[in-house]
Image (cartoon, rainbow, N blue to C red; front, side):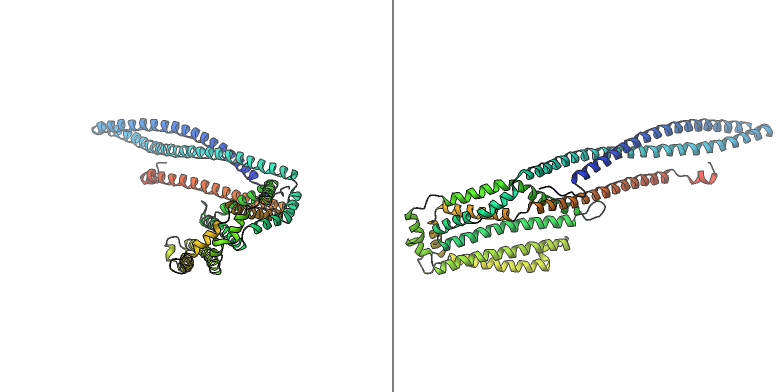
Length: 462
């Protein structure tokens, strides 16, 4: 069964992300090289500016010394020195401003160089991660491609037809064999308890899925958008599992039909064992209307507890989604669900107690008498019941599974996840780029605050 063409596959997203990461890494590497060159250049300018400022400072000191010595001499000499000092002062202040500007340029270039280095390291790490994701996506795509080719070779229609056929007379023969061996009352209760076991597993799995879905819905990405990516991934994983499971259809069919056949052709139960199951002291003591009613009431109470427990667990999730800061046990919905669960738990305890209460002093309890009757059934018969019910579930799945529909669901789920993943990647890159820009500009503002000189500004040094 060919997979429908999706708008975007995970391999498409991984390839695109890798190309983007490679381009960003190359750009970051180039920016680091440029920042290094610029830092070296401004360091030379700063060094030269500082040297000239030092020379002018020395000249300023020399002129002031000479002016002090000439103060008692000719006015013309004093005037000439004063003129020269003023001109040197202007040059000194201008050069001082240039030296400070050069120092600021060095500090700015150093900040840019360090930021570029950090961004280059981050980009390289992202590229390494993208390379791994690309390889994984390629491997996954190969798995799906191989599955598609394998499904083309599988006789899926024949499997479905064979499962339909096996659900008829062969399964009926296995049912008849079990029904002919196991007393009807015990078989009804055994199947009911088997269904309760399946329901308990389904409830636990559903509770886990609901909690995970609530977590995914509540989670946020770095840019504040709902993390739909996780929900989309969960849906994709289910769709992919169901699609790939069709590869095992023929194997599952063989196992189911083999189980049915094994039950049908199993050696007959001994006459003595049949007699013990259908007559005799254990049968007569256990097979009473009261016992059967108590067993059925206990099983019903178990089922009611499962329902109320599921509602209680759902109420907890709802309370946390509403306000995670408060104790869910204080939530009105949780309290209501808890009370209803407590009622059903009490009903179950009452049902269990009734099974453990003898009808009269000295008599065995209903649980004991019914249990003794159950014990007359050999374990191979109970295993046969389990095997036939499992085969029935497999055949039901095979006869109702549409590989084409599963392929369409997989394609749609992959498209949804791929698009969500792509959007999340773009959003994350925007946030990271803006965060880096904000950090750079904050550092520049701090540097300006430390180095700006009002006196230099009002004097017009530059």
